[in-house]
Length: 221
Image (cartoon, rainbow, N blue to C red):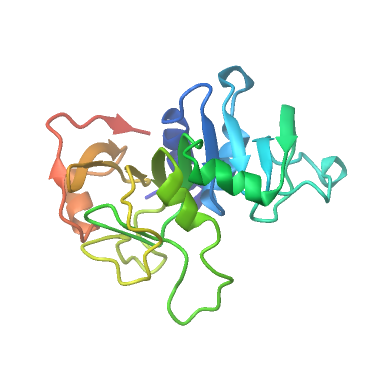
């Protein structure tokens, strides 16, 4: 069994491999944000933040390296890569809605078997609102979900039908958990890869949604 940290690191490593050199990528609040710490300068991946930054760098190494005025959309301190730029939030959302974001990497509470995402509200909990998630899922060229396979209580996050409020009507493209990688094909999900140490049977047991299985299933660690 993987620890929480091992699960997170596996998910992030596999997600990083999905990003193409030179692409513009938006990282959602939570687990996706940590992807900025993996970016290799040689790959020139440009991290976008909806509060008005293009060129988000890794987290500051220490409090002394942190600029309190330089934060991402999740209000976390960040750094800026060489050539990074600032702009107002209207311009930032115009980039999203105009289809200029190559990949949106986003977290999840639930994803249904057709790829519809719910990630902004747990019923009964107070939240500020959907934020930029609705725009990102709708406007990005590709949507990549990174999430643990199950909740802390062990309930599947990949479900037959979302019971939480959905984020957008557009389905996501790829789902990466510590146990599996799914790709949306046609109207449903296809299991494309298995996480090291997990069997196909264990994925069936921990996934409520129906899915197809690709003929050859590689393993990622």
